[in-house]
Amino acid sequence: MMTETKINWLVKKKQGLYCIPGDFFIDPIAPVHRALITHAHTDHARPNNKLILSSKETLELMKLRYGNNYCSTHQSIRYDETVSLNNLKIRILPAGHILGSVQFLIEYKGYKLLISGDYKRTFDLTCKTYEPIKCNTFITEATFGLPIFNHPDDKEEAKKLITSLTNNDKSTHLIGVYALGKCQRLITLLRNLGYEKTIYLHGALMKISEYYSEVGISLGRVQKVSDKSPSELISNLILCPPSSLNDKWSQKFKNTIKGYVSGWMRIKQRVKQKNIELPIIISDHVDWNGILQTVNDVNPSEVLVTHGREEALVHYLKSLNYQSSALNLIGFEDENE
Image 1 (cartoon, rainbow, N blue to C red):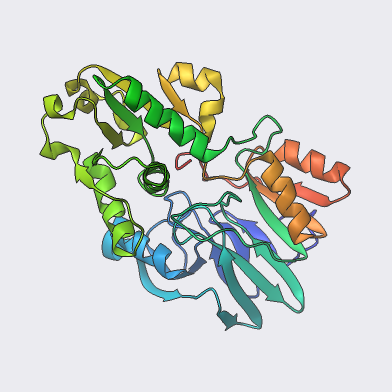
Image 2: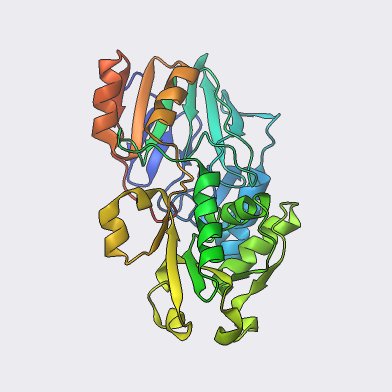
């Protein structure tokens, strides 16, 4: 249990955060009877729960990824809707992380708990923008919870890729992106900057990208990379999972320039370790200043910090006279950054 927290009806169990009066878990790491899911990344949305509650898009993305095992039964909730459960009121607000990502505002006996999940404050054409709301206890992520993380303008980072495509027109650009969120965000950034050529996708990126198009997010001309021969792809842009950048699949392409889209590309050692020639610093997570801005906006009396650089942020928040502590949850990785 989290002994330091003011909120005594939220506890930590081996499956994750558990709300006692609501009898549910939030983003559990193992199957449970009832779960609230903030978004469809695999470290937050795992299959085989009995009943799950989330946004319509998150539920549909989970089904797309997991098939019928994504849950036994489900309930979707709209942004203008409040659900009552065991004397609790549950409301969702946009988290700005990826398509369908939400925050949960949980009110019990007049006390308001805001669980942000993963979030960002940057405008993103592929999802609803983060909305702050006043609360008593705020749970924030800290993936980039250190002062060194100050994300650059995403449009300027996307321009780096367009410039490289223009200046290296005899090369094939292989760019590592995560299948859900980062892939589609990069494509919309490029399109908004005037890049109109066909963008080729590794097969693992197609299904989710097709879903984005089906729900009205325009990606322009995208095509499965296997439809073309490697020689036909010279001077073109190929997006693939980061794990494919250095596997056998990538070796068939000649004269490649390899890039990686991630907030971690600010760390030069990571760029070197991954043998990346074109680091593109675009993150779907909030940075240090964004966390502090959000804490100021939601104005809580208590901040609980999870999955990330917890201790540094907790220490700084205490210096600002917030009651703060680390949740020390396991099972949340930066895989989907």
